[in-house]
Image 1: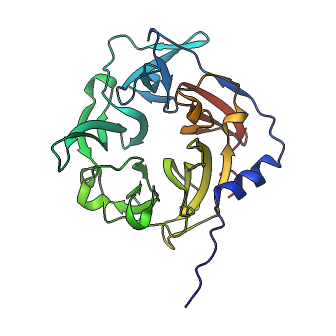
Image 2: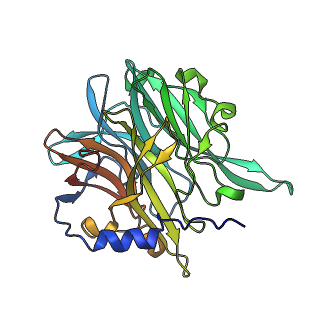
Length: 314
């Protein structure tokens, strides 16, 4: 019998390699105003829509679960304040990208459904909005039930690259799949479920997902994502990571951890089991060889960190 290759992307090994390096970069916890006693976390990167530069943030009370809204914020002095009269979307973990002259905004929609015992359960799916300004955003598509982390990017060949996150069965708690579509109207459950899973990306007892996609000069896709595991005490550990995916050969480079919670200033957590969580929202790449990572922290706050562009020399 042919022996399976060992997974070189084991989270523990990647973390040991990462923590052995010097890490002295600028980082900060972001301040948000206009939301009362609620937390803001799992933010998007700042993006432009309708002439405004905004951040979409997940807003929720510290002790609530699955009761989030996505609120839009604009920079004001040293903080981010709620955009006046902007829509509030009943979503989690928003993300944004630009396709042609429209903003595509996505997030996780949580809903209740009945199981075989006619008892309500929490379900979720990724939904997509499109528009040229905040007030014209309209929902136009949704992914399969119980699939988060579906991300889009316009490719150099004129198509749209899509990363998916199948889970369950052979995919465990989450792998990453990839496919190409011709237009956003092709985003639907049937097409997304056709995505080809990237082989051996995560160890069997670990999981991850894509958070943002960047097209590189050579046509490959730079993937910003997260890799995670749960320890024996049920504490979760999420780290920002990157890898490069070749859509022609369907091969991925080894994963590299980009940042951990310890690389940001100390702060609050929704609960102790979530202290070691970084959930990437987006990467703003600069011309000077550096990039700014925006991320949710410990399911209670959000921050940024400026570091070398992980895709600069690829």
